[in-house]
Image (tube, rainbow, N blue to C red; front, side):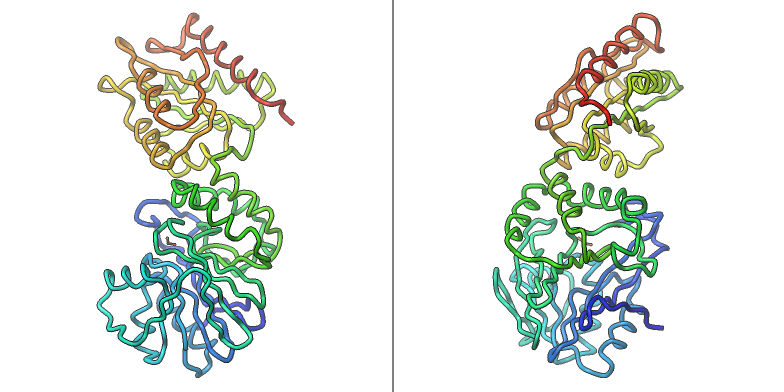
Length: 403
Ligand code: FEO
């Protein structure tokens, strides 16, 4: 059965959600599922903006056919050629032989790489600023390269001021009937997944996101329709503000996250003592994560959220404990920067993890390392406790007053 929602009188959500998939991109856990959004504009001409993942093809096709109600599909606009959005292009091209495919030069390069479709006479190649008139609706195309693939563009519908934003402004999480941001408690139920989605998938491309935001700065936007997660029809400043912070790698909050690795509980104990000391010093909402049991995508999202990060890890094979080493490498790859950090190392006979974690952090941009690095020889004792208290005091002195 079809399952659609009206975005406006003539724009329809025809996407679908997958609550069975364990790992998005076979990489990121999505316990709340994920939606693949697709939008159909019903005007003198009909236009579909992007398709959906193969997992929800049947639902999607029912939705499209329901909204078309016997009409043909005139245009398929391809804002993004990643398979979670383009898996149904071939099926649509077969079902609607008159349908034109709208994309940029790179869109069609990638389309031919993924699929064997005869597109002769069926492509409309657009570039920056080109428009497509559908009747009372007109789409204007704005290139957004590397947000987060090179062919990405966004489509701005001029009459209703709707931005079809591709992956930008998207989130993990299934659509549970409530399509719009004002129908959900976004801060409570969605923000963490939106941050985890952005930081892990788009995070590396902050400068490109900034470039796209600048291009759109003078455009009146009433609604944002992303390819995943809720549609925004109000409070756009909130969302744009988050994207501005994330893409400039500025922390969202003056907050402390302590990331620890621990084999037998001794490094964990030091992390707990530090957390309690910070709390005694007035720091609220201290976040503590065991990197061995927390997915690295959550660790990354927290590194983007918090201003102060502490890394505590044992020495392992004369290096950094693997789960921590992996996290630090992911931070570097995703361009995490501009944080104030503290270090706790452990080693029973030759502690090395502090030095190597320091080197990893110094390889990132604008990381400020607080002193001292705390060295545990197997377990926290009086001398290392004194150093840990010094690190706590350095963090407290550095934090802005807590509200
Ligand atoms: Fe949702 Fe970049 O694909």
